[in-house]
Image 1 (cartoon, rainbow, N blue to C red):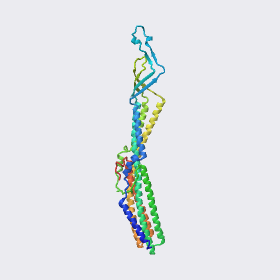
Image 2 (cartoon, rainbow, N blue to C red; image 1 turned 60 degrees about the horizontal axis):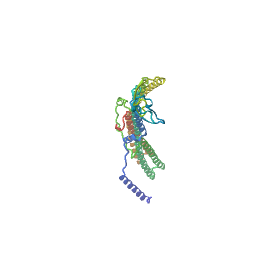
Image 3 (cartoon, rainbow, N blue to C red; image 1 turned 180 degrees about the horizontal axis):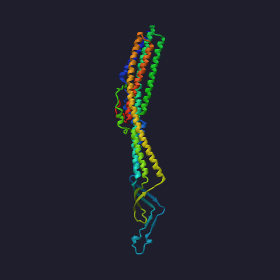
Image 4 (cartoon, helix red, strand yellow; image 1 turned 180 degrees about the vertical axis):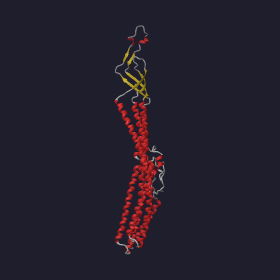
Length: 447
């Protein structure tokens, strides 16, 4: 026994020196703040990138729709190689007595190498349906932009959930480590009491089992932390580094529910998306009705050619105006379909408004409930810790049993777990309330 003791002391001395050196040269890093992951998600999250690119695509489609209602210019050049050249010799048909200069120049009808150039300008004069379809396309752009913002807030909500899961897992891990240390102290105390004939081998086995139970709790906390870290990296594209910080809410009350609801849900991105989609559907329904209105367009063309033929001019212009009016069963069916689509969009907008109000209502009451839960959990944890101290004193003095101490420690750990979970859920609920109200975590400070 005595021969192993110096080696053990030397081993622990070396370990302490190494750990001290590491503590000096490489301090522990703290986990990045929540806003860092939220900011990284703008470029690192796939859903957010897709939503942003969809808005860009809708903007390009709106530009195409606008272009159809604006004047358009075109140029076309044609080279033709004719097998035969067609020309007329005026001297064969000219009356007698004409000057020779007028009868010696041949009239080319079709040259062997023919060159043509066409310059054309098309101008829509009256296109009521096209103008309305352009307005519908712009509404689609607004809907896509609001949808991208709604996606961003949804991603932020997922990030906040994973972030506070990681924070909670870190707190649970630290609590489990403290429990493990206490279990080891209890084991040492129980072995000492067994040596003195006060404790039984069963109590030693029970103390050993408590160490295994604490180690299992540490493993569970490590698993939760690792899964939360992975989720954060997937959602934001940013790799979490460092130890999760302690989160302790100050249990302050939120502003009254009427303030969150009174501002109105019209600013919530999901509601604005539905509103823009309704506007677009109404514009398309109007465009379907305006399809019965004639369209008027004008066109002007300049033709340059070396095959002037009988005209005798190498430059020829043409101007035209066209009125088009078409009525058929397809137009009538399209009108009825678009009217039904507009009504569907109105119903969806009402549903989106109600859903936004319901989410704000639920999130506010979750915060209200979370404050009460955190306050109660802290009181229970404080009482449980005090009970552990008393149970340990009684056990050391021989007035209490080991079973009482073990039960007190388990109750204290369970109370600590409940407190950590309650605090983590509370801070997440505060973030969710602001996100459901349409406030971004990067612009609104979240406690």
